[in-house]
Image 1 (tube, helix red, strand yellow):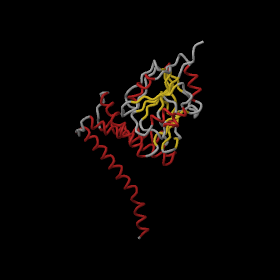
Image 2: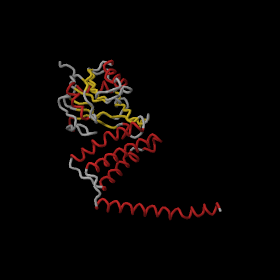
Image 3: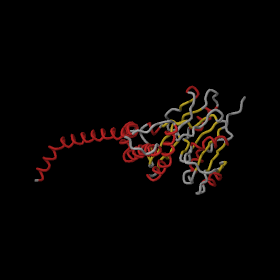
Image 4: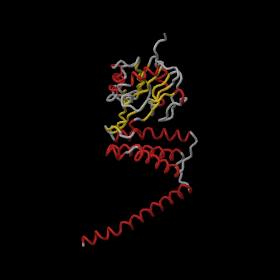
Length: 295
């Protein structure tokens, strides 16, 4: 009879003393909790120790992906659950992860993430059950250092958990507008640099098409209007983040104004003028009637 695989919960933290305790409490079931503290100044490291975590301290990094492999290498578990300080483990998840860790045919598990923005969960599965590879075999998986990227796993060795509310990571993603903007400003330059490093070339056409696709995903596919004001704020913050990425990408690419971009944007401008003019013509009769009525 073989020993049961061990599980380490790994958390990278920087000044998260207000949210870290709930995350740590939700991870008490694990064999080990390792917190890599990025030189916090709010007592986060002390809080983690009080909750029984093993704490490592290092200099800050701008994005968490740069530290995930480092904290995993310091862990002793056979499997790693990568948890953020603003995330909590749902009640049914520990037993399911224990069960899956015993399978020899798996290297990683995609866990649905239930995002809360401004205190409210989304109704769309895009944000309510957003699958993320967060549970993985330590010796077989390496975390990419590109912002917001996930490990590459052979499809046959990846298990995806079903969309069930008891099998999610609960993520307090954006609690306030300043917090959301701070995260966007911090991550956008790193994502822009990743675009540049990949050989991507900036054009106004690519930027506008990317913004339109993101807007469609967040407002239409994400059913932002169904979630009221929090839904509209969530969609706008997420689309704005990608605008920051492409604005940073333009600057890193030399901040050039090119004839090709000018021609493309002038065409867009003329199309907008035509649509605006057509709208004024359509509205003209009703406007005239209202004016006559006031007269």
